[in-house]
Length: 122
Image 1: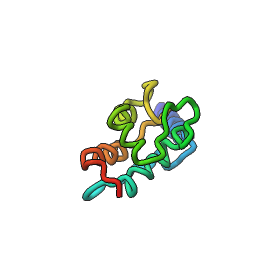
Image 2: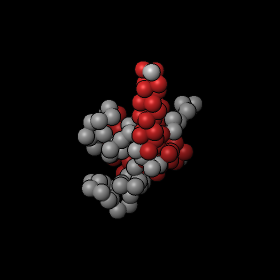
Image 3: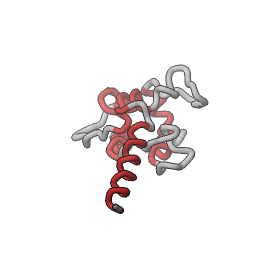
Image 4: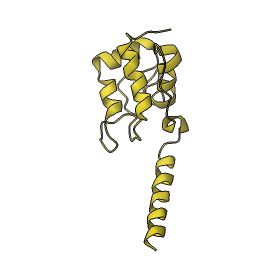
């Protein structure tokens, strides 16, 4: 009986997590990138799938800045702590995307690699 209850609890938790974000791309883990990470090929799709809803050309839902362009994303990493914000643990009120869930670590690693590779645009 305990096993059945545990199974139902785990199943419920998985269902809740899957339904907590209406963008399934957010929950998909990106494979590691071989070679240089670029904004256009690797980072822009992450921003478009996870951030642009609030951080669009005209920010909404209280977002303080746009993340719609290369320059804006680069600036957010260099001056506004974007990598720190997406790297926080679930449950932290400062975590982005706001309300979670936290992006998969492989996705965060792509953004970090882009910074480390020198913010290549193309």
